[in-house]
Length: 261
Length: 320
Image (tube, each protein chain N blue to C red):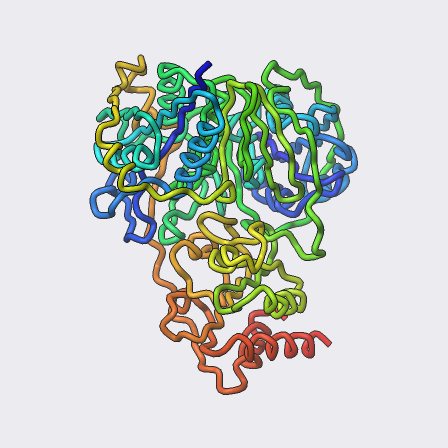
């Protein structure tokens, strides 16, 4: 029986760019290039490895985002995913994690799935809570923050490295998995993969397709509100000394002055 | 006065410091009611009371250790229903964020994560967060339901504020999802004797300039002289010089100590994302043009192999 894997990915502003907020305090996406979130590449990679081990598997990549977010889907398709779903709707502007998780959950259910895989966090919002919320919404086991993952006979197993302990986890499918950047280096798309990706299907859904009301998402539907966003004042220039044999001692003097010693 | 639920992070009854910091913040917005789960929960009461908990709700059950996260969400939800708090505060650990997130969606509330400060506002608690590698500071609040907020370590001072801290047993009924993810094995992380990276008051990190695993003892010696945690840049971790669990940065751990010392780290944006909210930043680097120097309060342009040992010796000498 076919293993249906859905990988959730996010299109994020490049962290090396000069990121800003817009007037409505949402992320300004116009001035900075976007790309597939690096941490989601690990999710795509693990999906590909799990599919390789399975008799018969199909990988769908799913994203919620503006038109440009298709680039993230294309990247995942060129890595080897089979098809893509793009949820796009003007009413989604400013949607927070609760709204995004609702859209993803409805889309995942509509697509059909045995296994959902996500990255550990996005590289822009960096909240790291979407996988747990998605598992809650879908009503399936969360097997999250895995640095190793395996799927066999309808069971997912993995290793979760926490602050105080390393845990071995096990759950039955359907389940939701999130993977860390220790799960395995993501492959680069081959030329063949890039060419093949152009022919792979990308379905577009809007809120109506998912039976979601506009007021459940977007800035209006957000369950949190950003009241202000201030650019941090540039740090006042620090003291910089050149080591001419006493650099360590000078630094110790500074630390003592700040009461760290 | 409104009650505020505080989720207690403890190891067999030893309360971790970020929870005590949460009690300080909780007192700004109401009366802290602590929720301690698992083995040793009762033993947490004394220290929680000393720091302001008016009540400590405890529960222990095998489910808390045998299954992942969800049993704790069930328990926190039971506490929420018993207390009807004005807010729920949870430490921003990986597990803490997952517990908070699932609770928030269950009770129909918004969630704010990784707050670095918290104050009372006219429309509920206002949380300060850092965005875009700490180049922005935002102020946010939860606009629907009971605010669920996770707070980063080192965001508030630990203050003594003796309160009753009466222990009450919390009745918990586990739902169908609680046993979904079984923990089939657990290996405690080997203790280095150093503080945990994410909650340390001082962090000393090494990067590409350390130039080999065999040289990391210099970074460790400096850390030990200050009672600090050891961090590493992605370059050092990718080269296999130091364990990934110590990586500071966008794809590693986010730290926010009182003092951050970067040695041989250039300060690429990915690293800055993980340490830029540190209160005082110090760097040692051969390259005077390294971007890390844009962030520092004090920088030494020099060879870390000369500067770091001299610094370590001087600290030891001053500490006597």
